[in-house]
Image (tube, rainbow, N blue to C red):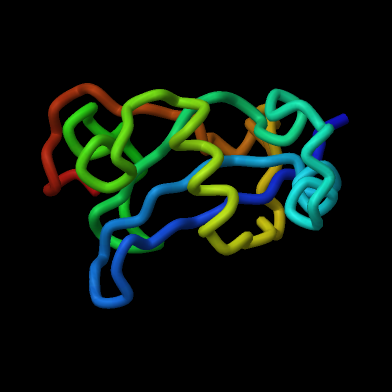
Length: 123
Protein backbone atom coordinates (compact mmCIF):
# COMPACT_ATOMS: atom_id res chain seq x y z
CA UNK A 1 0.00 0.00 0.00
CA UNK A 2 1.36 3.38 -0.93
CA UNK A 3 0.85 6.48 1.14
CA UNK A 4 -0.34 9.79 -0.23
CA UNK A 5 2.18 12.61 -0.17
CA UNK A 6 2.07 16.36 -0.66
CA UNK A 7 4.80 18.70 -1.79
CA UNK A 8 5.39 22.07 -0.16
CA UNK A 9 6.77 24.59 -2.65
CA UNK A 10 8.61 27.76 -1.65
CA UNK A 11 9.38 30.43 -4.24
CA UNK A 12 11.79 33.10 -2.90
CA UNK A 13 10.49 35.66 -5.42
CA UNK A 14 7.20 35.81 -7.33
CA UNK A 15 9.02 36.54 -10.61
CA UNK A 16 11.62 33.82 -10.12
CA UNK A 17 11.38 30.34 -11.59
CA UNK A 18 13.43 28.95 -8.68
CA UNK A 19 11.43 26.63 -6.44
CA UNK A 20 12.49 24.81 -3.29
CA UNK A 21 10.41 21.72 -2.55
CA UNK A 22 9.93 19.43 0.44
CA UNK A 23 7.81 16.28 0.36
CA UNK A 24 5.51 16.00 3.39
CA UNK A 25 2.87 13.74 4.88
CA UNK A 26 -0.36 15.73 4.41
CA UNK A 27 -2.15 14.93 7.68
CA UNK A 28 0.82 15.73 9.90
CA UNK A 29 1.69 18.83 7.86
CA UNK A 30 -1.82 20.28 8.28
CA UNK A 31 -1.60 19.82 12.06
CA UNK A 32 1.93 21.27 12.15
CA UNK A 33 0.94 24.26 9.99
CA UNK A 34 -2.09 24.90 12.22
CA UNK A 35 0.28 25.43 15.14
CA UNK A 36 0.85 22.00 16.68
CA UNK A 37 4.65 22.20 16.90
CA UNK A 38 4.75 19.21 19.26
CA UNK A 39 4.72 16.95 16.18
CA UNK A 40 8.31 15.96 15.40
CA UNK A 41 9.60 17.33 12.10
CA UNK A 42 10.58 13.77 11.18
CA UNK A 43 6.86 12.85 11.16
CA UNK A 44 5.90 15.90 9.09
CA UNK A 45 8.42 15.51 6.26
CA UNK A 46 8.78 12.36 4.19
CA UNK A 47 12.57 12.73 4.18
CA UNK A 48 15.06 15.40 5.18
CA UNK A 49 15.79 16.25 1.57
CA UNK A 50 15.23 19.62 -0.08
CA UNK A 51 14.67 19.62 -3.83
CA UNK A 52 15.33 22.52 -6.17
CA UNK A 53 14.07 23.36 -9.63
CA UNK A 54 15.16 26.43 -11.55
CA UNK A 55 12.61 25.78 -14.30
CA UNK A 56 9.44 26.14 -12.24
CA UNK A 57 7.01 23.31 -11.58
CA UNK A 58 7.83 21.58 -14.87
CA UNK A 59 11.57 21.38 -14.26
CA UNK A 60 13.71 18.48 -13.20
CA UNK A 61 14.18 18.31 -9.44
CA UNK A 62 17.74 18.42 -8.20
CA UNK A 63 19.50 19.11 -4.94
CA UNK A 64 20.38 22.73 -4.17
CA UNK A 65 23.97 23.63 -3.37
CA UNK A 66 25.05 24.77 0.08
CA UNK A 67 25.62 28.25 -1.36
CA UNK A 68 22.04 28.42 -2.72
CA UNK A 69 20.64 27.38 0.66
CA UNK A 70 22.79 29.93 2.49
CA UNK A 71 21.84 32.73 0.05
CA UNK A 72 18.09 32.06 0.12
CA UNK A 73 17.54 30.85 3.70
CA UNK A 74 20.53 32.29 5.55
CA UNK A 75 21.60 28.86 6.76
CA UNK A 76 22.66 25.46 5.46
CA UNK A 77 21.26 23.46 8.39
CA UNK A 78 18.61 21.11 7.00
CA UNK A 79 16.26 21.50 9.97
CA UNK A 80 16.23 25.31 9.68
CA UNK A 81 15.81 25.22 5.89
CA UNK A 82 12.95 22.69 6.18
CA UNK A 83 11.21 24.79 8.82
CA UNK A 84 11.38 27.92 6.65
CA UNK A 85 10.04 26.07 3.60
CA UNK A 86 7.20 24.55 5.64
CA UNK A 87 6.28 27.94 7.15
CA UNK A 88 6.55 30.08 4.01
CA UNK A 89 5.72 27.57 1.29
CA UNK A 90 2.42 26.54 -0.25
CA UNK A 91 1.27 22.95 -0.20
CA UNK A 92 0.39 21.25 -3.45
CA UNK A 93 -1.40 17.94 -2.99
CA UNK A 94 -0.16 15.39 -5.47
CA UNK A 95 -2.88 13.69 -7.46
CA UNK A 96 -1.44 10.27 -7.99
CA UNK A 97 1.80 11.37 -6.34
CA UNK A 98 2.65 8.44 -4.11
CA UNK A 99 5.75 7.02 -2.56
CA UNK A 100 6.91 3.62 -3.66
CA UNK A 101 7.18 2.18 -7.12
CA UNK A 102 4.54 0.28 -8.98
CA UNK A 103 4.68 -1.23 -12.42
CA UNK A 104 1.59 -0.77 -14.53
CA UNK A 105 1.54 -3.51 -17.19
CA UNK A 106 5.08 -4.47 -17.83
CA UNK A 107 3.87 -6.96 -20.47
CA UNK A 108 3.26 -4.12 -22.94
CA UNK A 109 6.95 -3.35 -23.03
CA UNK A 110 6.95 0.01 -21.30
CA UNK A 111 10.25 -0.79 -19.64
CA UNK A 112 12.10 -1.83 -22.80
CA UNK A 113 15.37 -0.06 -23.48
CA UNK A 114 16.71 -0.30 -27.01
CA UNK A 115 20.48 0.09 -26.92
CA UNK A 116 21.28 -1.26 -30.38
CA UNK A 117 22.19 2.20 -31.67
CA UNK A 118 19.66 2.53 -34.48
CA UNK A 119 19.37 6.25 -33.90
CA UNK A 120 16.15 8.00 -34.84
CA UNK A 121 15.88 6.22 -38.20
CA UNK A 122 14.61 3.00 -36.66
CA UNK A 123 11.77 4.55 -34.71
